[in-house]
Image 1 (tube, rainbow, N blue to C red):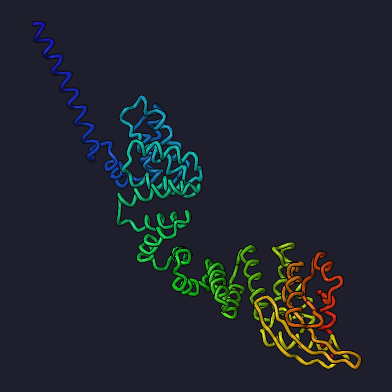
Image 2: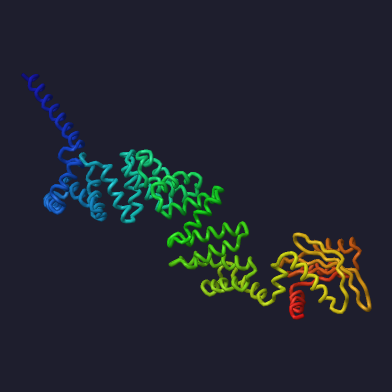
Amino acid sequence: MVIGILIGVIAAALLIIILMTVSRLKKKEGEPGSDKERKDRLQRKGKSAIIKEAEKKLMHDPHNVNALESLGDVYYTDKNWEKTWQIYKTLYDISTVHVEIDIAKAALRMGVAAYNMEKLEDATTSLITSLKKNPDSFECNYYLGQTFLKTNVMDKAIYCFKKARALEPENSEIYILLGGALYKAQKYKDSLPFLKRALDEHPDNKELLFQMAVAMTEVGMGDKALKVFMHLRPDPQFGAQACLEAGKMHERVKKFADAIKDYEIALKLPSVEEQLMLQIKYRLGNAYIAMNNIAQGLTFLKQIQMAKSGYKDVDILVARYSELNQNKNLQIYLMSGTSDFVALCRNFISIYHKDAFVKVEDVQVASECVEIVCNVENPRWEAKQLFRFYRTQNVIGDINIREFHSKVRDTKCDAGYCVTMGSFTESAHKYIDGRPIDLIEKDQLTKILKRITNR
């Protein structure tokens, strides 16, 4: 009899276990209490009725799991992130005593709510917890990747987006996020396939287009990138930056007129960020100067001076080119082509020996200077002289002057004159003591150039 009772008890216990297991399985498959059932109820009963019913239950039992999950579904669907966070925080906290709560789901929705409230630290913690429970959740990888993206943890963001892509390879938004994360991590070559795939489905996305152009520039596809930048120039959001990039590319190949066009398009765009506008005006001013339009270049450099004191080397440039702008021969000396420069040097010699007849015998053009050998005849004397003209504004040392002295001897000249727009070191000045060499620096050069202007 005792054995019979024991068998009955065991059978009853087994039956209870079986019934509980079946109940849980049904719940997952759409039976009462499952996500599907709750969504159906949400549509059938309406939000207000569900909220009212759930709040009534919670008044009697603040930890009523079904009521909390019903409210959580409503608030999550409505994107009421503050209340979503509170509901799923409660569910997560009581999950240790309520085994029926889906911890992965509670942590996921806590994380999504925190992400949307800009509570990125809380979002990261919650989403990582959820991911440990369910590593193959697309939604969790998606939002955790977004959180890492916002906190500039690019390697982890890339990992999450790659996992999400593996789970849903047809989801076009993942290609945008993965391409953008690789781009921001400066993995330009790796980013290009994903940016191109994203653009195939979102051809009007200007941010993707700009990122792709920058990436192409970085991997040596400059020609294609330039076309994209030029296409983006009128865009109100990315146009100014595209103009700057296109202008820099044109400057690299000495197409200063095209660069000026790029920068001037940017000036007409609305609401350009101040720092970006300063960069554009700085390059525009220098591009005009490179085209020998110093007056126009100074206009933009002075605008920068007024807007941002001490910006880069603008003060130095304004001082230098203001002086050049007042003396045409000074411009020729520093900036003109070789033929104009040589002609100016010949005039300089004539002015320097104003009471003598100068006959030029030879002109040698080197990368850093021009040398002119000439015979100078004066009523009282006659001499063969070597003039060397440096265009640099740097300081020239005694090594150059020693080499110049050797050149004077080799060419059998009676005297040598070394001319520069810069200056000579103290040791260079000491070296010429007792030697037939004169050093002509900026101040003396400028005075003589002004006399050429006034002839």
